[in-house]
Image (cartoon, rainbow, N blue to C red; front, side, top):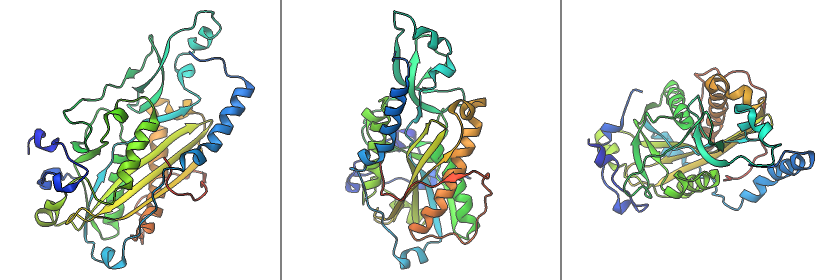
Length: 332
């Protein structure tokens, strides 16, 4: 299938969607100096942030028992992930000279951008003209404001893909034939994908999660590939704040026959993880493993919430002292 067909604009209304041959989608898998008052105010703001964001909520949907009993084959599709948020901003660790510049009368220009760190992590934060990181330049496609599917293999780490790969292993280990799609779902809004504000990205994720009808036409899956359901997995937010790492995952089960979202759930947690510098050093390998481990524990919970409880676990996540977040509705 040609790339132009795969990137054809899709409407949120499946009646206007294009019919894909999904056999082609399958694969083997300058700010002032921080002070005490500022730190306290920042902490209060972060503590209140869930309350501020809770205005955008979508209730979970549990799949009917007769639906899950019929599931034998599932296609797993990762969703585009918002950039990582790091508080306080890591520019002082990345460029220690910035601490000196803050004492100078002439402020140095700092701009909030989305950039790629050495580990190919997509981060929202401050960069300077003399920075060592690369500003992220998203590919601009015609009709990019519409949702679409794009091939995996992008030039940055996609945490939802890592979770999707492990999710395939988990489902297969539990006698549910599963396969990873070779394409991921791109967020539909250019203002989100081109914005340096993670809130814009989260808004696009929220719009995807709240839909009760998929914007992608999966009908060819049922006949050509034999899949009973599509399991989409995304990340609502993930961030590092003062030695803590927080993660929220979102999952939807879609009936490929008519595009109905017949189950969805969210789960979130946080853990005491150490400084952002220690997590992001060495190309962020420790952070990537942390997010994968946290995510798979949330996946286990989420699968049960949508009616697919795992009887056994194939993975052995690292022993991390998790501190569970209070149970709340989906927040963005």
